Image 1 (cartoon, rainbow, N blue to C red):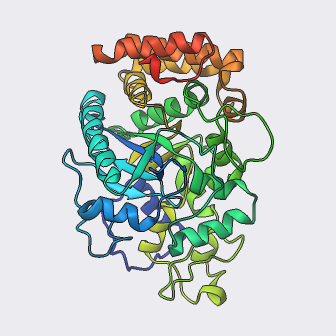
Image 2: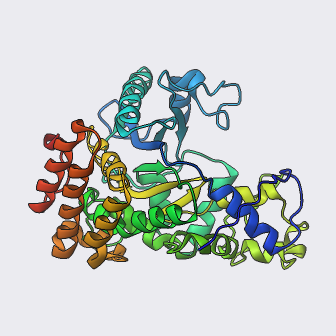
Amino acid sequence: MVITVDTAVPRADAGIASRTAAELHVRRVSFRFGPPRLIGVELEWLTARADGTSARPELQAILEALGPHAPRQLAPGSSARPLPSGSAVTLEPGGQVELSSVPCGSARQVCDRLTADARMLRALLARRSVDMIDAAADELRPPQRLLRTPRYSAMELRFDRIGPLGRLMMNSTAATQVSVDAGAADDELARRWRVLHAVGPALVAAFACSPSLRGAPDGTWASQRMRTWLALDADRTTPVPDPAHYPAWALDAPLLCVRASDGDWHAPPGASFADWLGGGLDDEIGRRPTVADLDYHLTTLFPPVRPAGHLEVRYIDAQPGALWQVPVAAVEALLTSPAVMDEALAVAAPVVDRWQEAAEFGLADLELRAAAVGLLALAAEASPDMRFTTALDSAAARCCRGRTPEVQDR
């Protein structure tokens, strides 16, 4: 596999000459090479009114609580100031709050920074009687969208054509996301990409903790959150096995939205970005896409491992309490060296591609349980930080007993 990266950066408003040029741009922005040394984390929480009713808070109450930290898209007068340890605050459609860390040199550093910022975020929201809920899926309330933006209106319309799980994903779920560097060269990128995909089903099972989701179709699932992702839009969320195939896959993925000045961002049903680029949507849209349009399209794709310069691991449930630190430490440890990565691939080999079973059965599937135990034990052995060794060993022991993450496991 060779990923050629053109260092010339086109203007955002520039047109795109051809599909080849579009694929080169996707490669450029998706894979930034350099020594793998940084790790980042995004944490999401459901929110509720702190009045005992469990009702969703008003959007205005959240924005007032955040003050200068509110995202500028929702509060135009905000300075969108990061929290003291550097984390940015954003909001998801159903009122979930999200903290995005600054990139850090270790899992310990990023966990310490996020812990401090999460504590402050909780205090800020409490000023307006808003609680943060440590849950990956909302088991009490039906989906309700608080963010009335053109993007989310177009997203809702697209997902509603497919089934009910799109609204649930948007409004009623929360995740733990871990980001790592892509690597220094093609071969390192290929190895890291392969490992993050291979261990995915086992880690989904290991950290599945969302068995209940209000409004979900009948069925028993270990991770209702992951169930929503697997079912809502396969052309947008399927794993991409080889990073060399990602640019072509991205162009052939369906359009979620087309930004327009009138606020109607709905995209022609069934059309891909490649269709737009090739002139097939000239009558419907009235113009060809720009580089900025392509960049935006990439933000509407949600494979379980998404390249955004770095690699985003998107398949882990939000965890109770401080247990979100355990999957962060696991991802760091499993990428520490080629030898560890090779062993992780061997441990995960029996359950590679078993995403559906991982979400549905979790640790009740004995093969997935064995892989989860093996990977967490390997992570405990390979972790560069003794602080996480005990937590990873404890998680391996929990998985061996077939138990889901619980706060008392800390």
